[in-house]
View 1 (cartoon, rainbow, N blue to C red):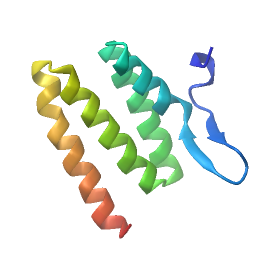
View 2 (cartoon, rainbow, N blue to C red):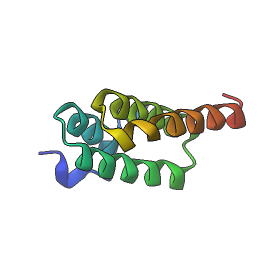
View 3 (tube, one colour):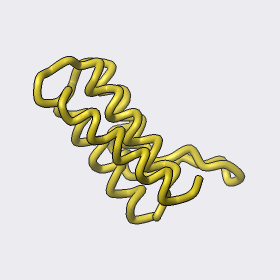
Length: 96
């Protein structure tokens, strides 16, 4: 039901909870759909970058890396440290 709304932002007006694609990526990763998870995470990353949402980029990259580590597929497992390092660099750069 959420699939058509992947690019929408989740908000209550007072609080912001990120983009739907981020959560769809987590769901796909949980269900073992690694290609779909990667596509959703990549879409969420583009959205956060376009909004200059640094804290959400850090959170996304951490979630993405964690899903890759859990998945335990060769080349994906090697990408996880790169995502974690990118998240840490973003965190240091933003001063948050």
